[in-house]
Structures are given as C-alpha cells and as structure tokens.
Length: 453
Image (cartoon, rainbow, N blue to C red; front, side):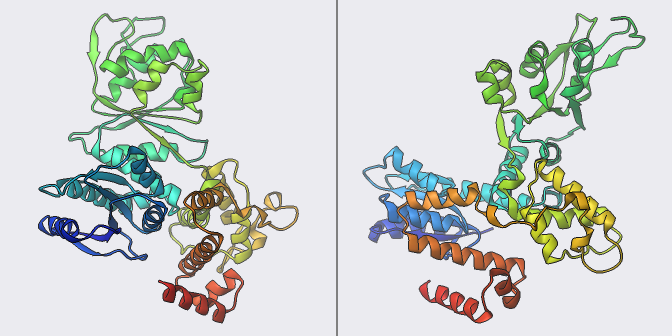
C-alpha cells in the first residue's frame, strides 16, 4: 500500500540532489504532493541548512501534519541544528550526507506513525479518552505507541482526576501480547505494612495467625496479565524495598514459603506525586523509580486542555442517560463551564455535569437555571482568564523563532476563525456571532487569508 505524504524542499536544494530524493521516494512507493497548510497527515521537509526561515517553515507545517525533517548536506549538520528542528515541531530528524540506497528509514517512520494515528482515531481509544486538544492528542499518541509496540513498564504521573486509571486500562487493552490475561489493580493507599507481604506475594496456610488457607497475592494473580499499582507514590520506603526483586527479576516468595515463584506481567504504575522530585528529596527509592519508569506519561490538568471541556461535558451527558438524545447546552451554560475552575480536573467536571443532568427536566437544552445554586459564580463567569500557559508558550515560541507581531496577530486571528467554524460545523453566521464580528467581516478575513496563501 502506498504511503501518501507531502514533500517540501527548502532551497538551495536542487538539481541532482532534489531529483535523487524524489526518485528514492517514488521507488519506495511513497506518493508525494506539494506541502499545503491544510495538509493533515505527514510531511517530509528536506533542508540543507537551518535558519529562522526554515524553522518557521517546519513550525507551520507541524501545525497540520506530522513532520519528518531530512537534513541533507555533504558537510554534515550540527547537533544543535537537529535539536532546533525538533523544537520547531519536527517529529524526527534524519541526517544524510548522501542519498541512501533505499528509503527504509522513511518508510519505517511513516508506517509507525500511520499505525499509531489509526489507533488514536479508532473508537476504542476515542470513546475511552475523550478530547481533541493538542496536549491530549499528543499524550494519546504516546500511550498508543508504548502500549501497542512495546512491552515497557509505564509510569503515569499527573494530578488527581486527570484520567490516570483510564490510561492504564487503555494500555492493557491495546497490549498485543498473545494469551494476555486480566488487568489486576492494586490501590497502594490501602496496603498496610503488616499485610503487605500477603497482599503482594500471597501466603501459605498457617504462615501467620488467621492464615487458614493459602492465598495468591497480586503478583501471582497478574501472571501473564497486567499489574496496575495505583498511587505507588504513597508506599512508605519499607514497602518500596519489597518490590525491587519481583519487579526486576519477576520472582517472589509467598509469606511462609522458601520456594521461589515466577510471574510474567506488564507493570503500570500511577501517582499524583512528582516522583523525580520525591527521589531527589529521598522520599522515594531511586532504584525502584528506575525499575518502574520504563516509559513516563504525564497527564495534563484540565486547565491545560480547556478546549476539551465542552466535548467532555457532552460525553458525560451521553453517559448519564444512553436511552435519550444528548440535550444541547445553552450558550450561558457553555460559557460557565469554560470559565469555571476545576481543582478536581476531569473528575470535577464529571461531577458538575452530573448535577446539571439531575436538575434538567423536559425537552430542550440545559439552561442556566439547571446550575445548582452552590455552583453558581457570585457574578457571571469571567472571560479574563482565557490567556493561559499554553497561549503564552505558543507566543513565546514564535518570538524565539523571530516571528513578528503582525504575523503573530494574523496567525492568532486565523486560528480563532478556523476553530470557531469547526465548533459551529462550518456555519459562518454562528461562527461570526461567536467571534463578535459581522458575517461580512468574517467573509473578508477568510478571503484575504486565501489570497495570502
């Protein structure tokens, strides 16, 4: 099957080099088209030198496509330049002094990226972890790749209510091991030092007072499956030490037994603590951290993915009563949900939406009166706090790349128009109302954008 991708040569690449690379791609079955701002797949950008114009080109392309940069120079490329390309938005950078005999490097990356994206867009991922923000989709790509293409242990770090257990369950679901057994969940906050050996490793009959029968522990039950240690950061150091051998060697002894038992499992851990800081402060064992952190995923707080608030709200409403159509949400309620703080993150949003659903009666949309009195802001929801860290980070990145104020403002306006049209399913009038401009003004802005591109 042909791999379709956009292709862009940054001057001064030309002549034999340009033709040789184009032929290499054709021979590998890679269909190429000119790079377009509307592309939404994969892009190859070939560069011979790295400057601010090239970095801006990569940055703009990466907003709509997964970019593979090829640094093609007989003199080689400085390591700092490859890092600059990566920071500008390239997913990977290949350094070529000459055109290779085959395009295996390119094909391997495009095939993996396509497989990952197909999984990210499949119903079992899309329905399990709702959201389309850049931060959330980047996390999903990480999760899908480590779950489906590796057997690495995974450490999920993030605030309470950000979906760590859902991610753990998705990793288990996407795991491709043949004969995979069940997911076993252990809440480390409930493990006491007195019973930890039995909980983790099991015990023999008569091993201690009250041990009337032999019992399997979590590591035995998880054999050929997945063991999820939730809130592992809450384990005291004495219990952390008990886990070192079994995680490293997959061998353990039951309490009251001298026989070693073997277990095969995939390990997933989660915590709302910053374990790297905990290790530095001596509160978490470094040797255990490096055993469990084969891959680290960090879940964003809801304030870092605010564009997911309304899709999540609709998802929770659909879950509340699957037998009835999902009620629309009136604009004042939408504004309230977007402006509200969520100290409990997604779990907090789910609670708020459940309360709205319980109060809502009859047909029609959820209205402002459905907001419980104790949830209502003292004076209507404010829009003052919309400039968050993500927006400032994007502007900071643009300034670093040498982008001027005019270009930053133009890009912000074009992005706002595109998002408003997406939210209103392409309806120009509703998008204009949302942006506070006339239909004519919005039409003119769109026309000017097309002419400039």
